Length: 471
Length: 100
Image (cartoon, rainbow over all chains, first blue to last red; front, top):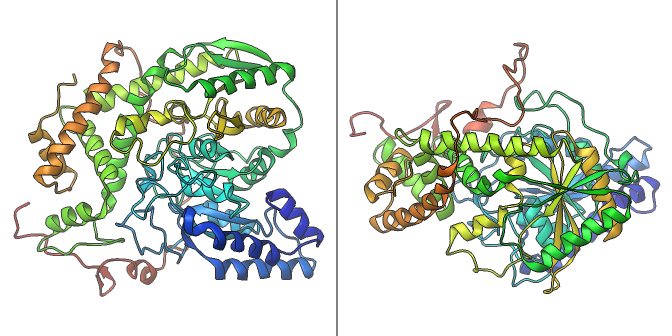
């Protein structure tokens, strides 16, 4: 039993127990985690206790939550009180947060059983998990290939059946790209619909938490639980969570589906074939395909790789060896800062801090960061124009299937190009999700990305459900 | 804009970012950053004079809450996670009397 909704139904009806479900998943972890390395930490004992408590509640006839007994993994950049949270960085190794992220509290309140913390590219900076200070995660479908990133551990954990669902964070595609590469569903919600309180900040105007699941219905169920206004996050949209499960069977008849005619180049042919098959499926289901132009999309990498590092250089200034994390002792404060950061951060994190500091520094601010913010506006305006004519847009999630380890590590720009289809959504703040839609010539999964406008989750999920039915 | 970045600039930026790079690291960083900045020149062709910068995706303004007492983080629990603490405070190396 893998599916979240089936697990909840089984536990609440008494046909299985939370203990049996958690043991089944822990056994799978034991069997394959050694070769996959999806987790930085497996909290087996606490998971068993939490499952036993759910079983007691069910036995006593108490009302249990929407995720009662569901084994869930958290990306290791979400704060868990008293449980190590590392961001896969040496600088935070050993840190036990003094509070829970809002999404963690919401999961617990809904009865989820948290099984562990998953591996990621250090501070969520990367597209393959090869930037983790603790070693990469392997793609469960072919361990010679990357699982994608940065939430590669969360994607792999669902793909391998270690958990029924997991949470990741998405700053430029870090949920959708690994979901596509591991053959699972991954959702980046509208910016502000899921609280960022307790999510370790990377680029605050782009970061968003979202679910990984094995199907669309599970994703809708989990997203309903974690969404909603949070006074602890000042960028949280003051609206209640949208109802998503209720719209899944409504179909796409009469819907206008956008096909981007000026899509950035560099996509593998079998990925483009699956995209055409997705349009055919939508047409067969009664939707109309409408051509749209997004001319500023070609500038998205430049805008993103100036804005995200700029925000990161500011956010990561807090790792100074004073309040948390690790310190390299030195004779004076400034030497301590530099020695701590030099030893604690990996190469990619340093590269982005440098790029961001440069883009924000006196004399360069207007030429780089200032311009990037204006390009961000152009991209957002392009989408606004397109959404006058269409309800959703379909693109590939990733230009290729899962690639081999080491094939992009020497060339940062080649790695950055993995995110060319996912980045625009983050810049605009819109929702988007990846749905598995067939495989490539290498038998590895291909994901189709469904994009919608701000707060367009219901429409997005209708299309995602239709894609899933057609796949 | 976008002249190529020099090694001297990279060393200066690394000081601003509180990162101490070895000469070899500074060399490598200079060439990698130069490559990226070269790619970023694509936006030089755009006329952005009338475009309003976009700093955040959802236009929330002046988000306020009532100023009410609430539980805050436990001081000891926070200090327990610090690299060095003493008498209820974070402990740091000397901050004055050294070149900054």
